[in-house]
Structure formats: C-alpha cells, structure tokens
Amino acid sequence: MSEPAALAELAGLIEETSGNVIPPDHYKFLGETAKRRAASLRLAGVAAYVGALARGELPGEWSRLLPHVTVKESYLFRHPQHFAALATTILPRLATARVARRSLAVWSAGCARGEEPATLAIALAECRELVGWDWRILATDVDEEALAAAGAATFGERAVADVPADLRARHLLRHGESYELAPALARRIEYRALNLVREPLALSPALFDLVFLRNVLIYFRPEVQRRVAAAVAGALAPDGYLFLGPAETLWQVASGLDAVDLGDCFCYRHAGAAAAAAPHRRPDAQRRPERPVAAATALRPTVHAPRTVVLEARGTQERLALAARHAAADRFDDAVELVDQALLADPSDAGVHALEGFLHDISGRSQMAVASYRAALFLDAGLFQVRLLLADALRRLGHEQRAALEYREVLAALGAGRAHEVEALAPLALPDRREALRRCREAVREGGSQDLAARPL
Ligand SMILES: C[S@@+](CC[C@H](N)C(=O)[O-])C[C@H]1O[C@@H](n2cnc3c(N)ncnc32)[C@H](O)[C@@H]1O
Image (cartoon, rainbow, N blue to C red; front, side):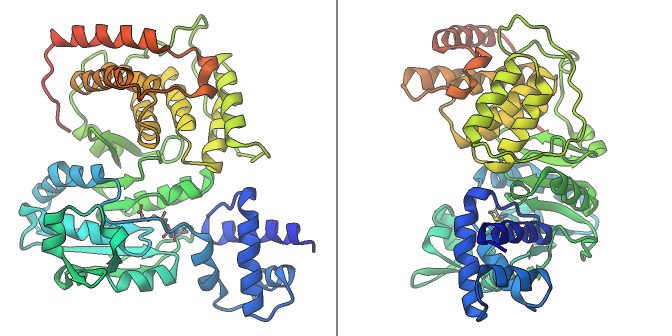
C-alpha cells in the first residue's frame, strides 16, 4: 500500500473509531504522527502501522493515537457568555425546578484536560441558590491521556488567563506557575473515558440537568453529529439545558431539540420545554420573513432532505463563493450542500456561517439564522452586513431591544472604520456601507419611539 493510500485508510479508521474527520490537508501532519507511532512500535513504516491497526493487532494503540489526532484546545471560562447565562438565568431556573431534591447532575461531554468541568464547578459554587446542594459533574472524553491530566485539576497560566480575579482568588490555589482547582470543588467532578460515537452511552446518572457538549460536534460529519446529538438528547432531563460551542448549531442535526435564545448565546432544550420557556413573541413573529436583501427573485420554500455530504477537493473559499452564487440564483439546495461541506472542512470560517444564516433566513428560520449569524460574528465581529442581517432577524422575532443594539453596533463599527465585508458573498448583493448606514439610522430612529422593554428568557 502506498503511503497516501495508507494515510487515507488511517483517516478512515480514525473517523470510524472516534467520529473525527481528518481533512486531506491534515494528512501531512497525520503522516508524521503515524511515522512516529510506527517507529515506537518498531514497525516497518506507515503502511505496516495502518495495516496492523486495521487488523486490531495493536492493543492499547488507540489510546496512544487519539490524543494526537483530536483537538484539545480549551481554557477556563472559554465562551464566557455561556457562564454569564448560567449565572443569570439557567442555574437560578434549575435551582427553582430542583428545589425538592436539592441536587443537580451536570455533564461535560468532551471535557479535554478538565478546563470546562473546572469552570462549571466554579460557576456552580458561585451560585447562591445552590449553596448546600449536592451538585455533581461528570466529565468525559475519548482521550484517556487528557482525562488523566484533567484528574489532576491543575492548570497552567494560559488556561486560567480568562478567570476573573475574584473567582481565581476564591477557587484556584496557586503553586508556582500552576493553578489547582480547590479540592472541595475538584471532589465533585468525576472523570470517565467515554466515546460519544459508541452507543449506547451507558451513563450514570442516566439523565442530566445541564449538558455542555461544546466544540466537539464540529469535528464530526453531519450524520454522526445527528446520531451523537440524539444520544446526548436522550441523556438530557426533559426540562434540562444543553450548550454547544458558538460555532455549532443543531440545524438539520437534531430533531426534538429547539434553540433557546439567551441574548448573547443559545442553548438547546427539548421541544416542549423550549416552547414553555420561549420569550414572548409578537403575534406576527412567526411569519415568513421578507428576503433579507433586495433581490428580484421571489422566495421559494426549500426542502432540506437529509443528504450525504461528499467532500470534494475544493477549498473553503471556493465552496463559499460557489455556494453564494447558487444562493443568489435561488439554487438553495445546492448552496446548502456546499455550506455543509465547507462547515465540515473548516468550521471556523465566518463567511460560511454567515451564508448558513442567510439560507436559514430566506427559508423563514429566523431563530436558526440568528444562531448562525452570531456564530459568524463570534468569529469575525467586523462583518457589518452580517450584523445588519442579525438585527433584522432579531426584529422579526420581536426582540426589538436586542435588534436596536445590533443596529447601533453596525453604525459604531462603520463610524470607527472596523467594518468589513465578506468578498465571497458579493453575489448576494448584501447592503453596502451607505445602504447599511441608511437602514441602521432609520431603524434606530424608529426604535427610539417604540417600547424597548427587555424580554427575558
Ligand atoms: C476542542 S475540545 C473541546 C473541549 C471543551 N469542551 C471546550 O469547549 O473547551 C474537543 C474534545 O472532544 C474530545 N472528543 C473528540 N472526539 C470524541 C469522541 N468521539 N468522544 C468523546 N470525546 C471526543 C476531544 O478529545 C477533545 O478533548
């Protein structure tokens, strides 16, 4: 077997075993890893290594290989908007819902080296309503080396850089250049190896009140995301809360889970629970929106059948540009297909999330459009056209005050020279700077005369 063929087979084995897609442009790195692993096992080379791995002749090898091929990027208080939402909204709500049993079960799925469960422990310890409660965190990962590191509950300077000083002082013990999570909190975290793509998930407890599954699904193919999301949803209490990473959405992924807008971020809940907690909407909020850009073509309903994504040898920008051309020509299904492919190949491209939002928008899924626009703006805050679309979508959903903030932010960004466009989206004829200025000024003027009372979750 040639080395390229061996690497393609190895990528396939990794995907089959862990769900993680290794894009072809990572094969060079994969080859170096495979060579090192082959040398340490005294095998002849990459092909011999892959062959032995495929035949199941290397016991324990997956535990040694997976740490090299899964992404471990994490730090405490990553995506602080999630922890702000926990503190202000989610934990007080759970405290009310669980007052009879005074216990909470929390799951950090894909916990890396323990940064996320440590942050959850701090957030739970800080919640006044939970003082004296029996809350527990299950922290799982497929990477056993990462779990061993997590068990030490000790972090370097970089990992704790975003922990607010008062919380650092209360919950982290400094030992030279490292920081240990206070033992009283660390004791409440249980670490366990768990591969999310191997079902059934065999969890204990069987149901969790709060699940963090952040920045894990983005590395999986849509069909695997769908399976994992369904399995995780099965472990979420009927009135529980699920958080994903800001660049992840469950659109086309999980049926039965709905996005709940928390202002700066989203979480997901079982459909019934989400409806019960949905923000008050104006009676017309569910109507099909106007197309978010001036375009001559009429809206057509889109049908999104489950599709098999075939990764073609195209770069993200090429896929994005082609998808934008399809969308501009109302070939929405083709555009969706390319956006799916582009997200799979590079989930961190702001333009792709922006186009995903646009496609939601023109199909009347304003809530999902908001999630995608936020993901795009999380990755690139200067995309003024995307912020304008976000503001329009928020307004359609009845969130006047949040929309007004976004319109003002567009004006501020344009005024301060920190606004820019996504070139690849040019075919969509999104509002240019002058048009955006005009629209935002008008919206802010109109907003001034409206009742802008905040609407909580
Ligand atoms: C980028 S880290 C995310 C860490 C943390 N959730 C956060 O958002 O900061 C992704 C984690 O998912 C884990 N992972 C990847 N595939 C997995 C699988 N099949 N089952 C469980 N965990 C997996 C990786 O080992 C890694 O620790």
